[in-house]
Image (cartoon, rainbow, N blue to C red):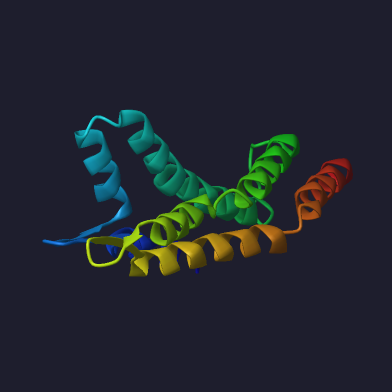
Length: 158
């Protein structure tokens, strides 16, 4: 579900900036590109990393962990447990993008001169984060170790 919500989160506009003369809507990536165009390369890199790279890595990691408890893998149980702990830790920081949009929306309200409002993508991005956090919490990390115990029994019986 999180991956499905992630697609509209990157297609729909995240922010809608309205000034006296025009309205501009920007997606996560177009906003980062615009920041880079104005010379804010560091901020653009942080936005791309936090809003694109980390969510995609979390989707991959949760899927890998779910598959690895069902089918044998060469990745050690310690590495899989460490991967699970990273996903759990990052989960609580994933909503920072939504907080930034909320703060910008609250701070920049200059009556009819300028305003910033959240776009539809903010809802989908928040849903994507919530679904990913729920899937990571629903995953029982003991299953990683159970697979190792089962494989150890098979080797001893052979």
